Image (spheres, rainbow, N blue to C red):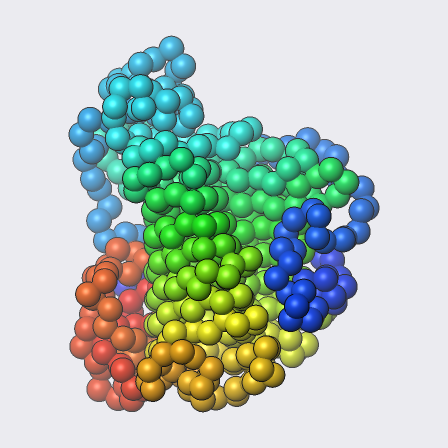
Length: 469
């Protein structure tokens, strides 16, 4: 049985949802493409923000999944070593001589033609973005002596301590100069605190991938303690693999919380992630197609997506929001809304010539609206009737179910399935083993359809990020 997740509960006062949506999402189709995250195109309250200094509180020492299929691994050969108790005068070339910062570790790796930076457990506070280097993988979760690796036990925590610096904040950056696949894996990453305001940035994010070759895998990505727009991963003009991450955005007071924001000509693979996006005025577990006309085809598979605002105000909540000539493949996902008292939640919403290639074998629960095509004013209460809105084959929308997945403990961010979860969710997913085999916890997915599973395309895989058996 797979382990339970834990999460942080950070809170601030909420803004007016209705006022926000007048600018973000209730505009006409012609104005929808405006990027609501940039200072030039969005007007908000210019109330003076809190001027206290950066919160340097260390991140909760819990990682994405407290139990993994493979818990201990020997160090990966020739590498550079980083430890919170290392030293800048060390050479970083052996476990006995670690350097003390990620930036220095990456620098040493480039200078010595080493392709891995191994990072021991500890707190790594940063006041500038950690910039990835071409082909240098940065791997967290090692014991202090580097003899074993288990990110759930040996927590390597990156915390951006910047506070309202006047520009958007990315804790970890994959720059456009990267030309080969580069990996960050096994960290707990909390983004810095940026505000909208006069000469101030408005976006804060744990990881940014820009026009580069990236793998963001097996991390716990946390929102800023305070801030305006928050996201786990921001992708622009890139097609990274975003796999096996737990994204937790629970802090109140934000304009928007978005687990993954995908912009420009980007076709990422987003799979085996557990995303919680709550309490903001605008909550989207996945937002794709922001500012694009390039017809990208993102792949969204086996994610568990939990989003929702406050029951006390008119917040706008989305499982997957699709924009601007984007043609995603959406398969084996679980999409759950926290509440629907205000009737402003859409499991999947498309706008501005977006058109999913396929929507197959997904589970939806507690959504006032399952599917909406804003451009054509088409709305479907039966998700499988949305076939006419896609550009795929006749079965491009099929096998979807509307049922309570019975997640273990959503209030505490445990998005595992229970043993009593419906059969069409426990074993009703498509078999995607040609592309990947494991779930978020590293467990091999089963491929035998349980007796009683009835939805089309059921092939034994559990829907969502976690396999039940």
